[in-house]
Image (cartoon, one colour):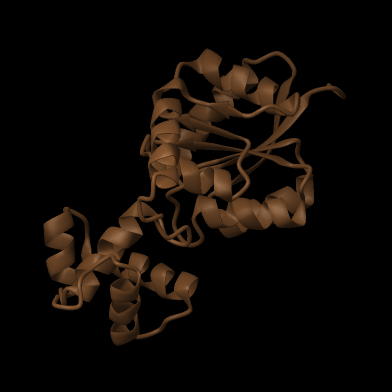
Length: 218
């Protein structure tokens, strides 16, 4: 299989990885050469295996897929990154493209779409799931018309949590309002602080106000 498309697969769910690996194994000329459970491991696996394509989820424990994709594109620019995510939101798609992704598929895509995406990026093309393409175009046009651009450093969920933090809510309150665990809130807050280089709540609040995420009266 010297001409096979060599793929590293990164997802923090073991069963999801197993299912995707099995699916990829059914494609002619596609070989899974490595797996990773988080962003840091994905960076290591890509460095070890030097694949043609990294297929990566966004939401993972530790370093997320967007941060890992950007770092991998910096270290290994010839590796094509394809994001496979449950999120069809335009913001996620735009951030993935800004991180250097060549493709973006939502997880309810048909199996044939995954194969088409892999072969498209190997030809030097980009691939977006039909379900997100229209949203990306609409979002891009809205920004050209003067809408406030979203902070490319944060995911939509992280901006949502940042707004809650700036409003004075604690981890338990945020968790209850968003229907997630307090531990998840704390993890997001740590990632927000790391990405923004701000390490206290007061600083996060000032940043949220300067960015227009909340008003100074909140």
